[in-house]
Length: 252
Image 1 (cartoon, rainbow, N blue to C red):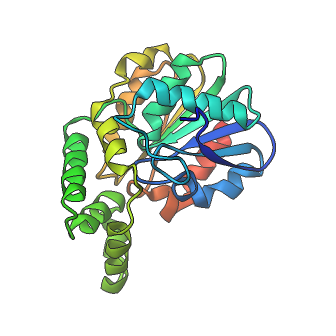
Image 2 (image 1 turned 30 degrees about the horizontal axis):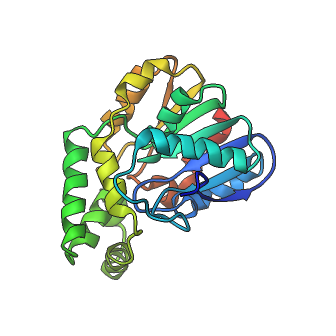
């Protein structure tokens, strides 16, 4: 197994490593924000094991090993030091990286992230895993309800909602089950007060997958962290990228 994850690079400037969430890729998770971020940064978009071109790992994912592989990938991309931003599952990976490699990380941002799976997130992940395991046709409905806010869905015609359901029900990343399993097992709560770099926490007010309380827990635990709320659901940065992009650009 190579230590280097699959990645792509965009832009020029100070380094910014972007980590995606469960069953996504770097490009899918951050796509609408990439051009804006790349205008001022060397953006490195990583694919976690089982996503994009990064092969599925044998056995369960290990958080420390994964953090080390992200650091190795950033070095392969030419970044000695960098800012790192993690969305959803990418957030605790970024946090662990900042504590294992503090000499490499200059700034930290989390977007709809978490330190541990509180009960609602844990049950959401368990339900996702169960529907995925039995190839349940209702998986798409679950993922739509977790990804989008009620206000956003209420404004969509039924045929567009049906297309979203069909899209999210098909072709999950090969590493989805392992990534869900990692999300259920990890806990970086003890890492929070060891973060010694400027930190931005972005929470989505209508997030029903990783509720805003999870972001507040991060902000309360990380010294000096700044908490910003943006409107929308778990994928608000894809539906309306402006608020999240502005927050990240102002921070970086």
